[in-house]
Image (cartoon, rainbow, N blue to C red; front, side, top):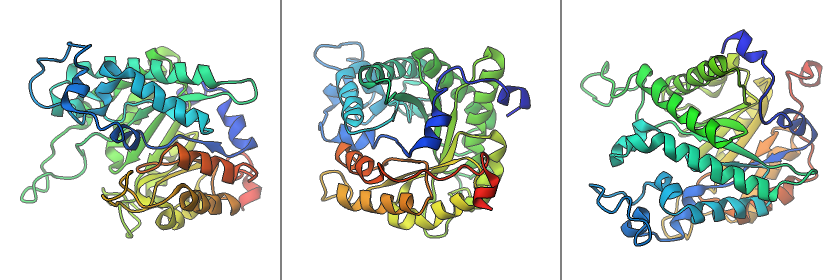
Length: 354
């Protein structure tokens, strides 16, 4: 990001930097896990019978969770409110896959901007319902990685092949950003990053938006370590990942998805050692288990105990849950870390971590 963009005051989310110094903040849990419990049919995803807008849309659209803000908004609002009731300070918009690049899979690329704006409005309304002077709530515009990668070839026989360009990602992310901002988000969350080049396209689009509009919101960044190698899919170690994006000066920097808290701990500890931003962590509820109601093994008690260990050791500033987590997980996490002190920002007090 350019220096003049970084010098702008936040237009929204102004209270977040100070709150992160005062206590450990709570992010919400999984959206997909909660949607799965409704066991929606193809007709439900189309909004039938009450909403006939997508009645004749070609191809199956079951599984397009981002579409539900248009066809089943009451479900998305209820999920947001369940997480807020559980103690979440920040909830994510239901826009993980609401880019034109991702929506091409459902032949709905043209709906991307609308999805983002409507989703942001739903999240913002839920936040306003639950906010109090002592506990303001914030809506984070969720920006996912897309199903395509700018760094890795989709063809094992052609290492130079790519199925998406940086400029195509940048344009798609810009459209998403504009929709989220118009809908009223307080901050942006570039998350589940498996390819740093994809993330840079999103962050470049954010920088352009901030520069051109004169608006600036806090930016959170969260990557995904895919296995015990300690690397994201495009090959970077956690330290390399941080060093390649630290110039953004994000409000928070951390990890989510792919691993449960137990396996994520060494990588969070590494970030806590080197990172001069607030550190975030929202792990999966352990390892996948298709026999479980949520698709994952860990109970709220187990996940919250592990996350509390991070807090006890001064590693984190923001915690929540990813795949397999529910409002019960978030409530347990919020209760567990309530009396823990947040990690000291290196950027704010270098001597404290030297």
